[in-house]
Image (tube, rainbow over all chains, first blue to last red; front, side, top):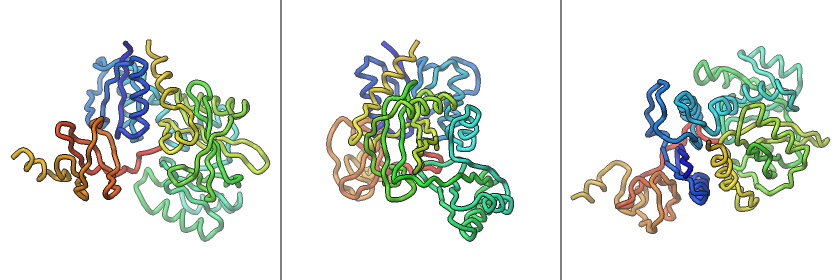
Length: 280
Length: 67
């Protein structure tokens, strides 16, 4: 019987479905709530199994736990490298750039006036996002100089030193949706997320529907997942009005509770198969 | 006495009760750590005990949570 440790923050619909799928595959699953784990920082063997499925919702907890467990000999899905990279949009962009993957242009700046000058040089609209953030929170479209001044001032005046970085990205005029391709080693299906709002996160109300992933999109998503070192990933693609496909983000802890009913992509089964498959 | 202690515990209303609105929640198959939505007040609740079944308000979503 394969032993798999599943680390979670909350047992949401996703984790319950994955758990059920693992048990159907005769896996012995041990559940660990991330908040309960206290682990010594040494190379002593992890008392759990060889394979850890990381489903912690917390970036901080998941990346440290993955790093610790890797030192202790566990195979963590996703790895600490993948979590660290995907959890930071700047590091993600750099990993994708290093592999020549098409993306919207973007830049990073550390001071208000310098960022404003660069935005003015490139032209409006642009998008600004926190380097570390989720569910579309604090993502803003900047349509002109006044908005840029206000948002950049907030970015650099609020929070702590680690927040004082501006990630500015090209605004892509999407045709009312974006695309998401699930990769588990290989592309395994996708959804289209429709919204009248330019932010197309399902957490922000976008409506998911299934789409048949063309080979070119599948290959691009697989390249993106490989670039960040992710075993399992949801790769967000943007389609321009001209039909060009760009990679926007790569997500390491795939959420599907809002989409599985309409898309019928069996992600819990696929994730369970993948985790069971990496078992030595 | 045991029940009284549970009811007095912070954020825990008592057996099968929503800590926010006291709506009685029944059923089986729950798992510790599972998050459910109260049908009475739509509060997000976490299962904190199984025998007896107990709920607490789910922890606030942290800034670094989510996809």
